Image (tube, rainbow, N blue to C red; front, side):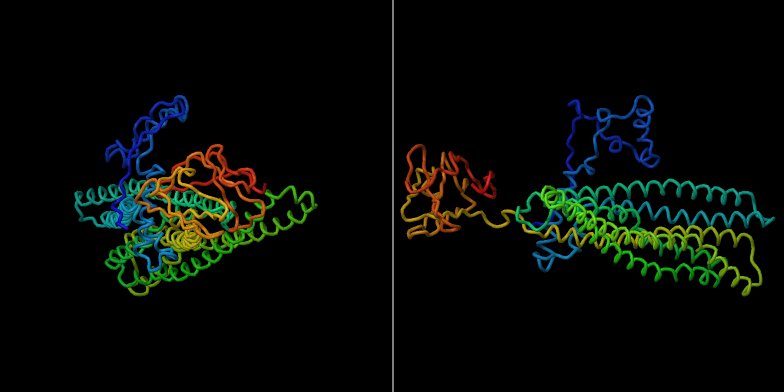
Length: 517
């Protein structure tokens, strides 16, 4: 398989409910200043203030947000990763799907990481300029120009941090939406190809599509902080070392010691997530089966038994959710307690080593600790939690995508022909080169195997099929009649009448109707 190129998204203009073409996307035509300030949203806000927002006055979607574009790009990357890069294409690892998702949304991931990097630098710079400005007020010999530069730097860093914070989270949420839409499209396409005999129930398919894509939205929001957090701590250590020396290492060690605890929490979240989805799958499956067979359940008076079983599964699921919420509460408690604990260790060691400290050192240190608290105490735990949950979801989605599909092999037409019946090219409407018959003995199968390079593979014109009443399974006899002339008089009435179709290469046809007659 050829390696897919960088995703290109086709722009197709959609229609409103009244049939009129939608206006072009506002964001697509906005300038860089409008995108940074989100001024491109103003027309929608004004429209809502005047008369309300309806489907008819909404603009079109950006091409990279349209579901068919995202699905096609992810499908191409998934097929390439499965058949070209995985050692065993039949059982690909979850990393194949993860790489396919990353390559599908490569440019949004890079842009989101760049916005997060600029925000991290501005947060550290804001704390540093605050310390320098306070030191300026303490120094009577400092020039006014220096103070103005420090104030300008503090204001500029605060402005950049405020802008890039919202830019980062907007594009991160948009990236999570693209992950969700692409995965839902891929799984929906897979569900359409599952055979009727598949072991995957309808409730399980709905559960995977609706619930297992949710963790990827949180991954898009917080995954970048796994490398932004060490970067912020290194920048903070550099400036704090210049201010308070070795006390900076003592204070930052409080943040570093929380990393193993957060990794342990992530493992617990992963285990709880696994047990939760198992209980949810069992509950959804049982509830779906109950609704399907409700007539039999009412006939047998099993309502109370089924209600008790479903309630038991729901309580088990709620118990796992309660454990997850307890862990989240512990993470929140650590988030609020980190700066005071780090500050106590820092200033006690600073007083013992240097026998005192200045107000500029205190303000700079506490400002940096507050910024690190948000990153280490809030974003990193959520990143680890979402990664643990997404790993479980990746395993489930990967298992779902590996189920066999209808028509996965090469199309073949197998027809059993008894010795008493005849099958002519004219009755089937096939040319001499389109039909290969090997049925020369009683009950021997006739194998029609046409090379896909010769379209059409099979052509039927007004064909009728019937089976003898005494036939069983593969020994059943088939006769074909064209018009009113029957070629076998020992058969029942035709089951399939007047079938006319042309089957080309890589096409699947199914005859659907009542069974058991």
